[in-house]
Length: 78
Image (tube, rainbow, N blue to C red; front, side):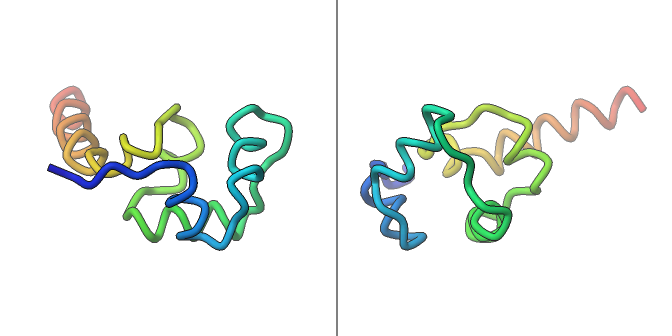
């Protein structure tokens, strides 16, 4: 089972204030492209998946398995 991560843990991982992370979640601010790339790299997510799907911090830990399942299903239809 993956470790649960709260906003403070996630913010600290990327050198952010928790309030900045809250601003991103509430769409009062947008993260820089550099930060988006860092998050994608850290959690081995494509930029497309990271910016197009609504995911939570804790979803990220399980996301690679779900992404592979989705990719397998999508490939069947191509």
